[in-house]
Image 1 (cartoon, rainbow, N blue to C red):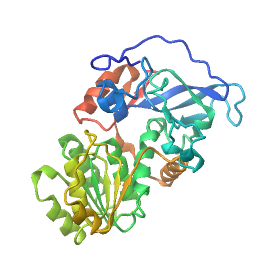
Image 2: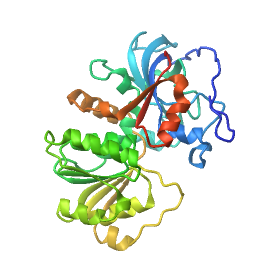
Image 3: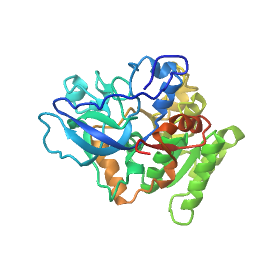
Image 4: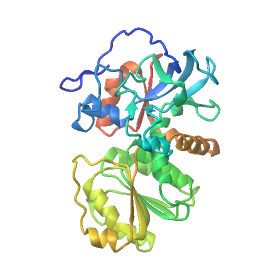
Length: 352
């Protein structure tokens, strides 16, 4: 549970087992994962605090088994292995009617506006369920499909990846997933820019594991060391075709625009810490280069889910993303690991 107090007090409380309403199901949570949004809630950051309706059970990345069906639910059975889209949309606004439910005007998010999954049970609408195959998606991977969807949506928002030079800014958990998809899809090259030493070390370890097996050359650079633009241009023959901007850092965004080859694309998932952003040399770096800037939010419902499950079935390897497995009671320890950039995905087990 979270309360609106300094430090966003997150505490343990015995709650009654929730009953599913009409059209809902109750799921026994098998595994859950800490998301960046959960960190923001924990620290009561301004970027997210206004969205939270406390007291509330936080958490929105999970997998589990259906335990009880609400009235009128069809097509599902008790025991089914599932995850769920935790964005709850209205289905009536112009965005929803245009098949853009991921930008619904009236979106509510489980784990912010209503109880989420950091508990033994979670209740969700049956229309939001996603069926999983344990042979393809083991529980420690099924725990963070929500975040994987953000990564896949970002990568696939580009017109193409195969055979193109890609710069990825920010190798946090979602950045690491996006990098794995870029390599899997056969990019001509991948450059990873990351300032945090821990994340950078994990990026280099992952790149080393791919050396010799992957046709995609991967270089990992520290943008604070200098020389990044020159090294990227040398490796790509003049600039990159696609920037996947996962960091939200103004300097990273401007460097990405500078390094895009004319006609290139920037996919922007990272959220800057401030409301306003200054783009340097806008006419030179955007207009006269004919760039495309694409803001990315959430996952397409449910096309992105189908895409990412297809990637996993084809062999996308995400084992390196899970750096820590803790009991649900280890949530505070998981937050500390993430704050120190010592972890990517921390998977929580409410049964431990």
